[in-house]
Figure 1: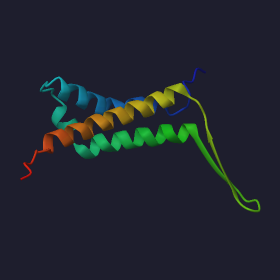
Figure 2 (figure 1 turned 180 degrees about the vertical axis):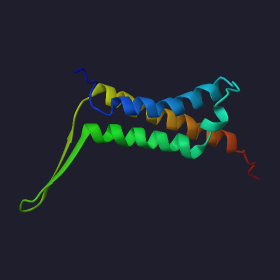
Figure 3 (figure 1 turned 45 degrees about the vertical axis):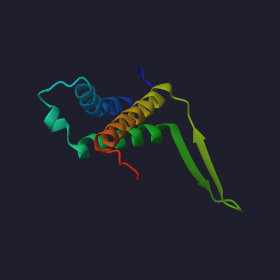
Figure 4 (figure 1 turned 90 degrees about the vertical axis):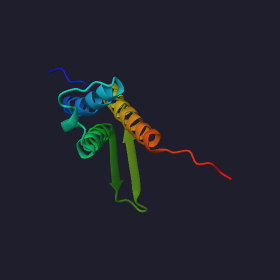
Length: 111
């Protein structure tokens, strides 16, 4: 069976569809039919967080070995598709935070 880095790759792609759709339609200023439903901050930030966590979990391995003294081993696997999904999730999160900052920022005159 063909696998693209991990068993969670398809789940991550499906989770990133919602924020990608919202950011794309908002940037293009379309009044898309499902934009009001997908515009929920809990839905968008939740799917980004879950996609990031699933992909980070599939490339990172943390193990505590009970030696004297205890040893913490952290290993990272280079799985390009999982890294691409993590980068996409961070870019979408950055776009959302940039929009929130620019939309709510008011310059104040200092006297």
